[in-house]
Length: 495
Image (cartoon, rainbow, N blue to C red; front, side):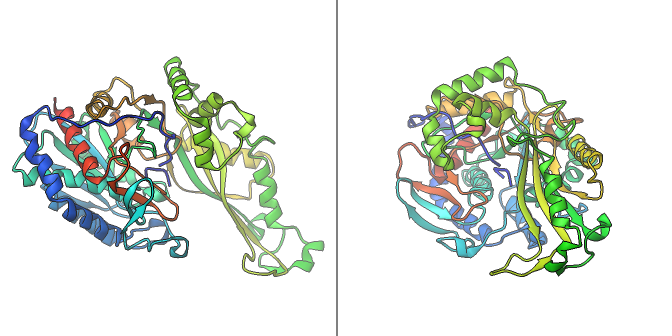
């Protein structure tokens, strides 16, 4: 749904990758273990992909939590437990290495839905296939979002154990199985008193990710937009007009249409240009700071507009914006988006029916200053004032935006680690997509949060999702190098 996860800005700069020399020679046995355990690590990921946990379909959530727990135990976490919520279970785990510093981790074990007919390779078989220009990739649902990067991090822990070396930091991990439906119950995990106390001792929380774009680029993001996922439901019975059941469309001459009632309500939510028009929705939105504007300037200078348009399959930006303005909009503009519309008959051919019920699936993206609760309240008030108070507003998940200061050690250590690989990783104000980092960055924890990891993959939420395993492209790192990047990041965090 997000991301990683989440939607990240297309990466900003093509980078040369150089051979790395470990600062600490005693790390060489750990690096050796990464190579020696390659087949084992790849098989672990394939087995994990073969068990899809899909919260939206109620599929394998218990089994997914159990698999998550087993993977953590195998990787050396001493305390691993299932955490009950009002929805799908979460997982809490700790690894005490006797270290001076402690780092938090966020994992998800759920994946997005998929239609096997749309894939060129079976989505649960996680086959290794050739991808011209990239190398050998693993194709499967969850390969990059998010099991692949998480499996790479766990492989780093196995490499430490195989080398007989303790981790340089202690770990506190929280995982959920509802990220792809907006994390509606994740706060129940994080705010359990003992879990919150454990997280409060960390220097911040990061989520593993395959951070390289298709040209080898990487960025360091300082946050993410928030999101509200919801349904708007127009029903004849609730409205008191139109049919209370589907009837023959000939009756349209004498009956109101719940479907058009919903369409008319939707039309009030945006301007003619598509910008949010919900009363009070974005009143508290914080504009870009001077530092964030400079980040945009750098991005506009270093990134290819032509490549971005090609990747998205577009010829022009909304409002015919300039390249720089499109980047400003990406990170700072709240949005109102229709994900889907469902009413009446949608099969082949026609069916002359007047539907009694119509549903619109929406997502609202939020920027700093805005809140989930505030956005929902504004939407309900807006509809009621315009005569659409009968339309049900049913949130299914979501959360506030996140923001982390650029001088946070969690962020600075990412920059330092990427530099070990010859990468100049620019800062980026926030991801345009979303993830539930607000439970870490907001009160009462107020922790830094971010994403880190080398490696490349694409196709999250789409057919033919993949993760690069063995790279034939000198600009891109394969799975073993992604594993190594976590070793180097943990070592950097400990310094």
